[in-house]
Length: 211
Image (cartoon, rainbow, N blue to C red; front, side):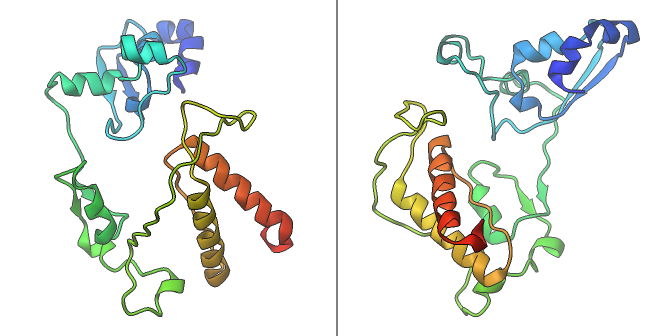
């Protein structure tokens, strides 16, 4: 059941009188929303999440600035030194070359070498003896402006870089063409995501194979 549905079905929850509540992705749920979804019968609250990643989305900047609505109950309790918390320390998905980039955020992160050390390189990189799982691609093109998701005009909340978007899309299409596989592009800003999506659509219109 989602948080929204729990609020809608509060009469049912009050009737069922649950004493234990498990909340997934708790770091992405605002404290007011979580409090509203908990019936008074709950005695044991189990919160699962990662406060080092996404915070609760808040549309009002004033609520973030003055009331800290972007801090979840999960994060606030951890910052207050709540006992009884547990953090996973073993990762099973990333090659060590990639996972070591996260040690500043997760200093106790360890690799399950029996699973991740043998992760193969992408097919298009295997022919190069110096190929690596993590590749840094530097450029000197500054951010030119912001984009809004609605009309494409300027926005004070998101950044974009047209040259970087062009590089990302061309590289993704090159890899997809060589490997016959899907490629994921992660963008740090909504504006950059919009710009990348537009460039992909431009390529798709010019080449029916990419549609």
